[in-house]
Image (cartoon, rainbow, N blue to C red; front, side, top):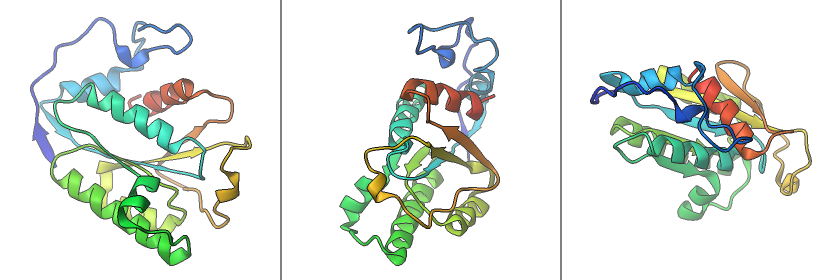
Length: 195
């Protein structure tokens, strides 16, 4: 779906390249050009950003940061569908394979509906079954970006680890949060999304 947007003027500096260690905007050095050019297009494709990975590996934190970043650069609402919120909304406490499939399908339906109505959508969901994610990616084509968030560090919710989780194998962005704080992980994500 293509939505006409006003052309945005170029800037000498890009807040895209904000450095968490310095705490202020740095000259872009080319990292933000992809995002800047996306904003300057007369016609823009709205996206679904799908964060997947084990519990407590950083999906929701990065999803919220992306939501804030996109919303500050958009004239339309950006939507964030989070797995825990979705389960509370649909009263789905079933963590069996079928319960997880139902939760993933619900997230996909909501995300596609919002996307079809001209919105960027962020989804942060364990979504352990690769075939379901791939099916959705095939349906959306270039309008979806899968982001695999993972760590080798012990996390506080490791007891919720999904034993049959299947990591993505192609067409995804890999974000290892092992040695990074959330700001550093988000900077890596921005660079890889709009390089």
